[in-house]
Amino acid sequence: MVNPEKRHEMQHIGNTIMVVMMEVDPDNEEEFNKWYNEEHLVERLEIPGYISARRFKLDEGQGVLKYLCIWELENGSPLNSPEYHLQQQRPSELRDRAHSYITARARGLYHQIYPATGSYEDHSGFHPENK
Image 1 (cartoon, rainbow, N blue to C red):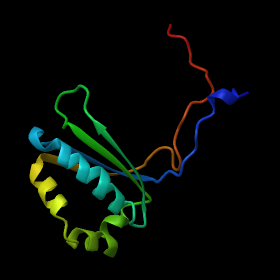
Image 2 (spheres, rainbow, N blue to C red; image 1 turned 180 degrees about the vertical axis):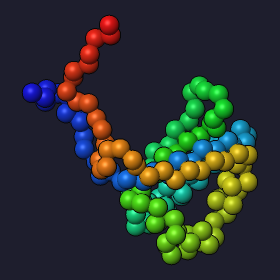
Image 3 (cartoon, rainbow, N blue to C red; image 1 turned 30 degrees about the vertical axis):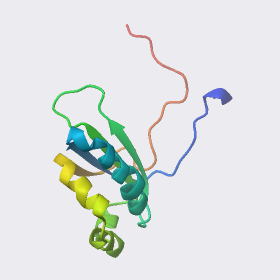
Image 4 (cartoon, one colour; image 1 turned 180 degrees about the horizontal axis):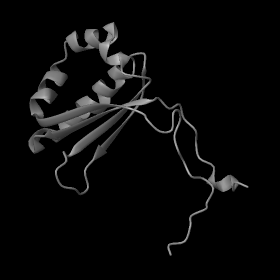
């Protein structure tokens, strides 16, 4: 029986994620984050097929970039949509400045392989003892 206090919020889950990592000029991080949070995220999530986005800043690690954004998508099609291409052509002085602050960038589109749909989560509370 599942403890009601351990229930987790359910959310729509796509089967594709896009991972974007960036390094940003430290002198311009504030303006870069303003663009990403207040313009970029909002615009992209207007495009059909984008489901959600989460941003992270590195606490510790080696060989990785400081900023990470995980975009959840229905599939890879939003990246080829007319809406996506129109947004890229829309003028934005803030975007143009923010792009100039990016010193390194990596992007990957990943398709879910397991489980076939949804997410694998252990909410049973059962964890075998280490022997």
